[in-house]
Image 1 (spheres, protein in one colour):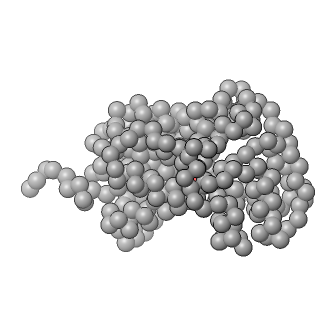
Image 2 (cartoon, rainbow, N blue to C red):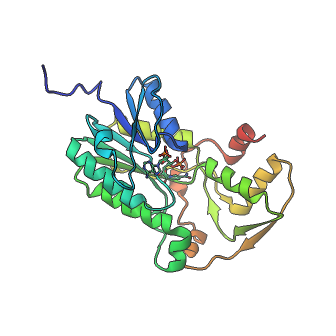
Image 3 (spheres, helix red, strand yellow):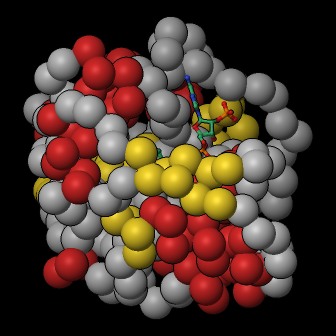
Amino acid sequence: MSTQRDHGQAPILVTGGTGTLGRVVVARLRDTGATVRVLSRSSHDPEQGVEFVTGDLATGEGIDAAVRGVEVVIHCAGSTKGDEEKARQLVEAASGAGVRHLVYISVVGADRIPVVSGVDRAMFGYFGSKLAAERAVAESGLPWTTLRATQFHDLFLMTARQMARLPVIPVPGGFRFQPVDAGEVADRLVELALGTPAGLVPDMAGPRVYGMAELVRGYLRARRKRRAIVPLRLPGKAARAFRAGANLAPGGAVGRRTWEGFLAERVG
Ligand SMILES: NC(=O)c1ccc[n+]([C@@H]2O[C@H](COP(=O)([O-])OP(=O)(O)OC[C@H]3O[C@@H](n4cnc5c(N)ncnc54)[C@H](OP(=O)(O)O)[C@@H]3O)[C@@H](O)[C@H]2O)c1
């Protein structure tokens, strides 16, 4: 019996394969004929071409089993807090398992949004965590690729839905965003995962830049609702960096689907 791995057979591990981005990554990988393994904190029945492993990246529980026999990992698991610890747990297990390509999804501005004060941390600690997670990946000794993307349309849809419950909607004044389609980011991640490790690749963003109020107004229009929108000036260095556009990627506007196009499909 050969001890060599058959590259065509080793499953590709997708952490966060149950999330907004990860679900599409899994579907795209399946379309290529790959066998996919999904890590989730809860148990799931297997699906055609997809097996599930239960584990928690916050504690490390179940992660050794998740990476066993895997050569490529696409790390899409994340939350608003603690992504650096999740990345460390994954890197440690993957290093012991002979993984030959770790692909990570980070956020545009991770390196440009300073998280220094308590105020910065309370509102924008996510960006500091993503930068620390990027470093854990880059310093892991594993061959790696990291893609930074801007916010997905789905995030603004969720935010706008919540805000529309209020009679008056507060928005951070001077903040602009360049939302991108999660499906297009998934396509790019799969392309990167099936290629050779490339380090930090160019940022990926949507085709247009919008003010936060403009994003909310687009949603209200699609729902035929009327609300007053009030800009609020947020304090701190991170908020200042946002107002200066540190979360935008004008040179990375490769996404095609606009916020209006997304809304027409999902809300209209
Ligand atoms: N959303 C955006 O606008 C945006 C923009 C740029 C980059 N990103 C990055 O893209 C990635 C995916 O974002 P998303 O919006 O698709 O996230 P999401 O929909 O909130 O899904 C999060 C995923 O992470 C998994 N997860 C969370 N904590 C975990 C833990 N402790 N152990 C194992 N799995 C855990 C969840 O799996 P279970 O619940 O099944 O355990 C779920 O599949 C994140 O790294 C995020 O930072 C997001």
